Image (cartoon, rainbow, N blue to C red; front, side):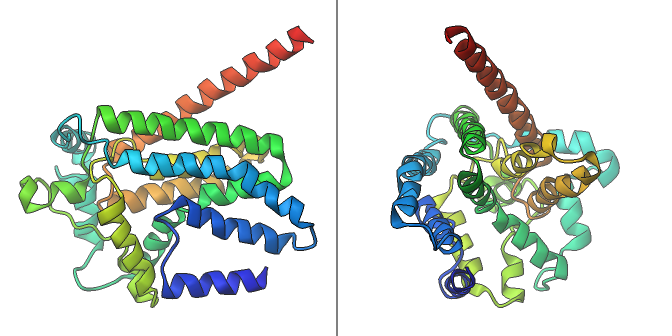
Length: 296
């Protein structure tokens, strides 16, 4: 496992973070399972490909199709600005939370220590759910199946929304060609330079420009994924630990709003989608269980 960690760290340093292709991310995770259970026969390790390849292909299809989600309707942005100003303007002096946070925390040309944390939190989006899923796959196949059903439906709901309601983020609204509707800068990868991971930042920047849909802000799946990663485990965790677990989606929320990646309304809708997904999938699982008992 130590060898895998060293190789992965070297790869991130020289090549960048494995975010642009789900096949690459899951390739690294597959190698991690091999390293963790190196005593197992190869037949066991090949089961990973059998179980995960269809899911990886679905994620690739999701990534590709998301890039076409803004072809049907014009992107929305003014109503998102209006909501954030209406909901939080009393605390921010009439501006959006993104503008207020950058006015108070961000200095052009200077990388603050918290921007390193912010970049790490932002990057965690790309590996947190896959890592949790792989760990569940090794420890409990029924739990893995429950987790994957919720993850898949959350992606489907998000993709449908991207097609029906393309929404632009703060950094997009700040561009002169879009009217400079807000005063904000996209700074989600600034922290990498401060710790010498220039390749990591360059990879994420390229992904943001080339491989993503710039008007797929609603809902914020960054926050939704982080929230789902916590909510899934809350029933089995003592309540005194809940604040510690919930710190992750809250830190992701701060990261996304501060770095101009999402409006607060995007985050709230992402949380709502997680709740909807858990209700729908939970009801379907209970129905299927009752049906199984009836048939038996």
